[in-house]
Amino acid sequence: MYPYLRLLRLFATKNKRKKLNIGDESILPMRVCLSDIDPFIELNNGRHLTMMDFGRFDLAMRSGLLKVVKKQGWGLAVAGASVRYRHRLKFLQRYTLTTQLVGYDEKWFYFHQKTIRNDKIHSAALVRTAVTSKQGVVKTRSVLEAMGHDEMEYTVPDWVLAWADADEMMPWK
Image (cartoon, rainbow, N blue to C red; front, side):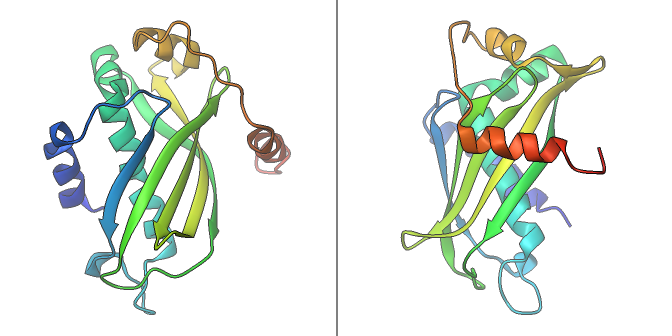
């Protein structure tokens, strides 16, 4: 089940965290809870991605993106992700979730997210997202302009471009 209580707490405490620019890094303290674990008493692999939702929500709230999305009647969608699991996170362990926009192209925003404990990366993901409307994907430039970032420019790092290119070659396209 989706951790709605955690999501409500994130929304309820947003004013206690400082505002961010869309290019800033969101840092959230987290803990592995009972509802997060698998039979090996560690953070479930699928739950890693669910927790990363919170990082993107936090950045969207604190940067003003979520406000613009709601005002325009748009939505947010994940369009792809690659995750690398490196070390286990055990029940009740605390960790930090970091989220940062690493680039965008015409359609997609690319986020790099990491779970970190004691300065060690436990998992990392590259997540491609889109802002959507009833007409389809909203161009990233339109989203940034609606946020007041008319002049913002990001180059997409080579490693992100390589990932996106490889994803285009997948047979399920």
